[in-house]
Structure formats: C-alpha cells, structure tokens
Image 1 (cartoon, helix red, strand yellow):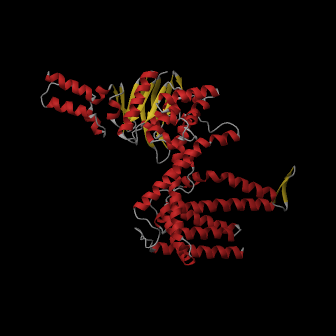
Image 2 (cartoon, one colour):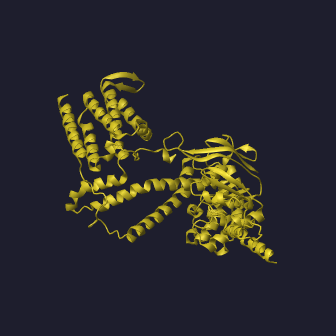
Amino acid sequence: MLRDITLGQYYQTDSYVHRLDPRVKIVATLVYIVSLFVVDNFIGYLIAALILAVAIMRSNVPVKFIFKGMKAIYFLLAITMVFNLFLTPGEPLITFWKLKITKEGLKIAIMMGVRLVFLITGSSIMTLTTTPNQLTDGLESLMNPLKALHVPVHEISMMMSIALRFIPILMEETDKIMKAQMARGADFESGSLIQRAKSLIPLLVPLFISAFRRAGDLAMAMEARCYRGGEGRTKMKPLKYKQQDIITYVVILLYLCLMIAVGIIF
Amino acid sequence: MAIILDHVNYIYEAETAMARVALNDVSLQIPDGQFIGLIGHTGSGKSTLVQHLNGLMKPTSGAVYFDGKDINDPEYDRKNLRAKVGLVFQYPEHQLFEINCFLDVCFGPKNLGLSQKEVELRAYDALKKVGLPDEYFYQSPFDLSGGQKRRVAIAGVLAMKPDVLILDEPTAGLDPKGRDEILDLISELHDTLGITVILVSHSMEDVANYVDRIIVMNKGEAVFDGAPKEVFSHYKELEEIGLAAPQVTYVMEELREAGFNVNTDATTIEEAADEIMRIFQ
C-alpha cells in the first residue's frame, strides 16, 4: 500500500528530458511554476498546457504513470475546488439552502484546479526524469553563489540526497516491521482513533531504532571512505552544459516572455 | 491442522511493466508434526511462500488451505490463523519494541484477547522454553546479545501457542556458536511441543542434521521435495541452481568413485563416520 505512492518517483528510461542537465530542469520547473501565476486567462493556460504536453512527450514517461502517481492529491484538489466554488462572493448562478455557486466562484475554482494540476504535473516531470542524486547535484551547483554568504551549500545538498535515499529504505522497513507485528496478531486497521494511534507504537519504536542504526552505519561508512565535507571534493560526473541544455534555456525564456505578454495583454 | 497449497502463483507488481513472478504454480502438502527445511537462494521465493502460509500475502491465483478451509476467504478469521501459524521473520529482533523482554513477549498473546493472567503465564512459559536466563526477563531487549535477542523474538511468537512454527532464516547474522544454539533450540521445540516446524534457510548444512523433509525452491518453483537423502542425491542439479549438498555427501561420493563400497546416503558427519568405519571393519 505504501508502494502505491509514485508521485515524484524516478522513472528509468532514456529521453531528451532525461539527458538534460538537472540545473536546466530545476530552472525550467521554477519558471513554469511562476508562469502559472502570472496569467489567469484561457490563452495563457492553453500555452502552459501545450508546453507541458511537449515536455511529457519528450520525456518518454507514460502519461498513465504520471497520473497514477497523482492519486494522492485528488483529495487536496477536490477541497480546493469546493471551497472556491462555494465561498467566492459575486453574481449567483445556482442557490440552494445556504450555499450558492457564483459565476466568479466557478471561474476561480476551475482556474485553481487547472493551476494545481499543472503545478504538480510540471514538477513531477522533473522528479520523474531526474535521479535524486542529479537533483541534489543540480541544486548544489545552483546554490553555489550562496557560499559567499556562508551558507553550507554542500552540507545541505548532502543531507537532502541522504534523506531522499532513505525514503524507499524506510518504506520497505515499515512494510517489514508491519508484517512482523501482524504475524504477532497486531491490528493496524480497525479500532477507535486512540486504539489505532496506540497500535502504531509497535511499528514506530522499531522503525526509529532501525533508522538510527542505519544512520550510524552510514556515518561510519562515510568516515571510512574519508568523507570530510565539501572542501576540495571532486565529482565523478561534473555538470556541464551541452547544446541541448542551452536550447532548452532559450525555449524556456521565450515561454516566460510569452506568458508575461499574454498576462498583460488579455 | 495440515496446510495445503494448491497451484499458488504470486506476481509482484502484477499488471505493470515491472511484474516479477515470485511463485510459479507451487503445490505442497504440509502434514502435522513435520520438521521441514525450505531451502533456496536469495530471491527464490521462499520468503514469499512462507508469508502465504499465514495470510500476510494473498496469492495472485491458486489457494491456500489450513485445516481444510481457504484462508483467503473474506470471512476467514486471519487473526486467529496468525496465532495458529506463527511466523518468525528474518532478523526478528528488529521487531522488539517494549521496555523489557517479558512485556515484549506479552504482545502476541495480548493481541489474541486473552486474560492478563493467561497472557503472563504464556509469556513466562515461552521465555522459559527458549532458554532465556531469568535475570534477562525484566531487562531491555536492546541490551541483550544478538543470539539472546533472537530468543526473545522467537518466544514472542511461541507465546501465541502456534500449531505451525515458521522461521525465516533464523540463523542469519549469528556466529557459529549462536547458530548451533538456535538450531538446537528449534529442534528441541519441535520434539517437545510436537508442532510442525518450517525452517527457511539457504544453507543445506544448517538443516541437513535436523529436518525430515527438504523442499528446494528455485525461481519461484518447488523443484525438489523429499527426505534429505533423496534430495541430496540430486547434488549435481543442486549445484546447477547454486546450492550444494552437505560436504559429507561429496566426501562419500568421492569415496565411492575411488572404489570404496560406501553407502552415499549419509547426510550427517556422524552417519558418514559410521559408514566409513563399517567398510574398514
């Protein structure tokens, strides 16, 4: 059941998007998110949908896989839309009991829904096509200027990559401990809220202990390989911009200009 | 309380591009009181198989019967089944969570809804059976040695009084002395309690001395099933799937090839020694 969450999981294949420099993908994703907030009209969303479609096509990730991973946010999406639909004041369209749907509410609800879906699809394309290691490498490189302000950039990115690496490990561990306790008659699914919270103790205690044990082992292994922070550390695969990265930057820049223009004109 | 597996198939992540067959048409009968060794390589499907026996995993197709009833029937009481079919996972000490050993062993029987008195009696009894010294009863399980922790974890399952005890790699990560102690303990539990024991292992050497039946798994299929002597006679095929017969089997085979008239059925060092002594008399 925990395995069903595929939102943001790396999808292994080869494609134009997979081969892009992670920095390009991070910048492109940020630009895309910003662009969704500068426009609030139909044409703007059409352009955003088009560029998203192009990105999905060139990423070779099956569309089914992308949307399967979004199941987790359907609930959030529904709440956002319902609140906007009923709580926006304006010209009423339908009124029943104390609730009324307004024209403005309908417009905002649809807009917010579309925006949210685009936002999540856009950022999941980045995580689907970039390994966590590439992602943190890219972030480290992008944050490099902050070193001048004494921000521990390398340490932050190392922590991030370790955290990301531990997610699947801990998920597997949870599954294992859960089964072991179920074999001893534990029940995680029924009972009152308090009973259920209590039933988590036999799961959480071993999980924390195992996380600490793994963290200790990892620290030892890193030390055994002479890890001593980012100072003077070289990379096996240094990030270098290639032609396709520059082309993508240009496309993204043009896209942003277009979106701003559309946002101002309409 | 026999267990019957009827054409059980299990596929991981079925209907996706990453589908992997873990069990392929496994049919087995496990009668009462047997001591079974389930042998196979990492990834041969042996851990998947044992999780089907207490209903933690549901076969993709096929059925598992316990005591004549289909355990995957929606109305079947699987909680009760898990008390009857006790499963000790690999590295069971990783599931310990209570502040002392005694309370941890109480967890299983308490989940069965027994009275406090009965729970404590069973926990005490189980800890005695696994041979944990009394002074450790009220110590934190995390302060014990690896072998002792494992005893506590086995007691945790034993306290539910199972009819079938399944142990997944109970000797993994133990030193030779700890390994022998745990195996002796399991064998003793089988003899004194008269329960069915299924011992999952990747080492023939581990199980050869104890069990009366060996099931060999390879790539999700049960390839050999029989008495140890019978299974070890296929030592060439066993080698092909990356397993090996106990060393004595090889010694006896080589003696026979060298022209000595020995019986190659010997599976333990004692039997082999007797056999060699016999031909020199």
